[in-house]
Length: 248
Ligand code: NAP
Image 1 (spheres, rainbow, N blue to C red):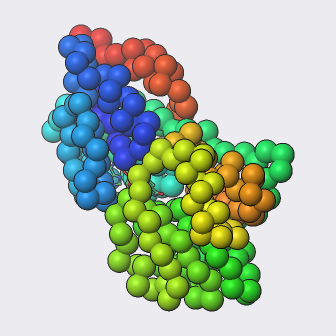
Image 2 (cartoon, helix red, strand yellow):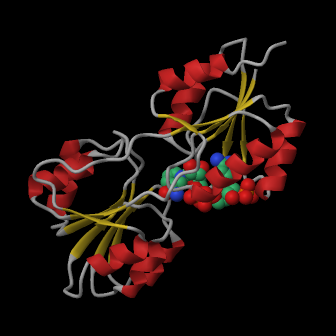
């Protein structure tokens, strides 16, 4: 059973580890190539875009892919839309494996917004010390509010940092522990946190830290998903793979 995993997330790595070493499956992990030094994976992998829907259809056929698991980040909307279209065209079953969205709990001060431009507007006119955790993508939007100081955390240093007159960059890769998030936010005197609603446990400690410290959070909502089948737990994915095993 030839399985294409669209990755770039902890879900994709988790699935890759679960399938590694099995002789009844032949998985391949695909990464966009955004991170300079991706973590090693125990299955074959490829890096780089496919060249749109047509390129992905050609890849699925050339590699004789039986099943596709879209384990891209919930905000990787273009790749997910391409996967949906390509799998429909190639008549290959597709499953979306994604973590559930975060929801606010008691004591949280969340402002939920539709996109990064709305997140910038939600910071207001008065200068604040803002912790940006959305990674490299869409950092440029914050150039529209140069009055704020930005603590920017990402894996690789973004070129767009130069657009922010007052900033500090922290290079780090999750998972993040609560005590480290508390220390960072206290040390940097953070007054507001901005995050995408990525979901998952690896990066949720910042939300708890914000609750404990009474720091308001601007949360960017997820883009709408497609109509492919969805799973949020590894066991469901493994079950789906077995249920869709092609008959010899
Ligand atoms: P995107 O906007 O949905 O995709 C842009 C293009 O990048 C796609 O059309 C595709 O190029 C290529 N691409 C994306 N994911 C790919 C994959 N797994 N394998 C091969 N090509 C891929 O994606 P994005 O938001 O830039 O995210 C890029 C990668 O970073 C994804 O793997 C995603 O899981 C990961 N990531 C994203 C975020 C986020 O917030 N967006 C956060 C953490 C990790 P072609 O059209 O040429 O095929």
